[in-house]
Length: 100
Image (cartoon, rainbow, N blue to C red; front, side):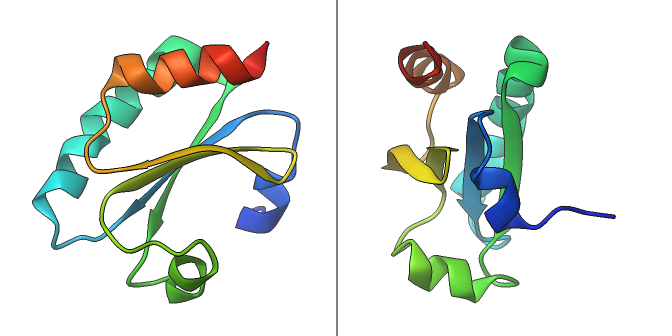
């Protein structure tokens, strides 16, 4: 059984979410960056990709206007967000601030 997005972001484990569009070249660049983030953080962080064309509700709910937009959630709260391609280093740095 898969868990819902809302349930996952309510947890204690930080969640990095990449809101992306399939037709957006910068969104494609985020795939390897998120893979690196997951490789570095392991089970300490959950990494999700949210295809906005399939989940327009969340684009409206979180006011996503450009792609990619990366957000970090913990306990249902948005801890950080940035639009555009974000480096592995920047995501890891933000996680380090918010995990501890």
